[in-house]
Length: 50
Image 1: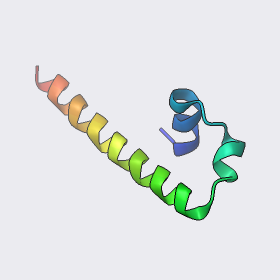
Image 2 (image 1 turned 135 degrees about the vertical axis):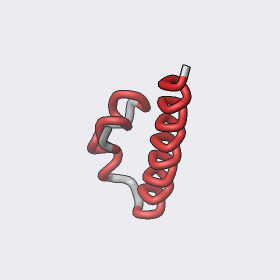
Image 3 (image 1 turned 90 degrees about the vertical axis):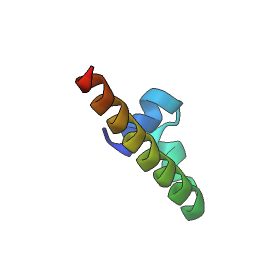
Image 4 (image 1 turned 120 degrees about the vertical axis):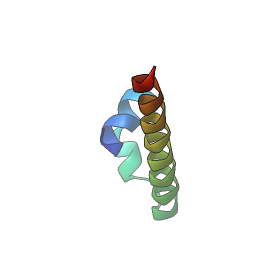
């Protein structure tokens, strides 16, 4: 999943809203996105074991 799609589909943030953010805001959003994707991967691995 790409960052822009994730923000639009799950957080209701349009691509234009993201592009208009300050660099520091984008860095925080990107870090949170990475953390969320890592968390989802962990959940997926647990579900595959069940």
